[in-house]
Image (cartoon, rainbow, N blue to C red; front, side, top):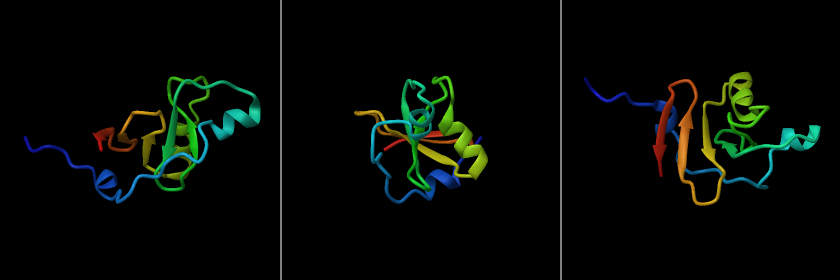
Length: 89
C-alpha cells in the first residue's frame, strides 16, 4: 500500500513559533494547561488534548485550521487534525 500523503502538512513552508508560551484561552478563564500547540494558519498558541480544555483541538475544528506545531521547547513536530498525520521537522 502506498504511504498516505497529507497535503496540509506538505503545504507548510515555514513553522510559526509561539509569541508567548501560554494558552491564550486558558489565561482568559484562569485555567491550567499541560502542553502548548501553535496553529500553523493563524499563529494562535493554545493547549493540547491532554489539557482539560483542549483549546487547540477546539480551535482547529471551529476554524478549519488543520495543522498545529508543538510549542514545547525542544519538540519539533507538526500534526494535521483532519488527516491524523504527524511529521517531525
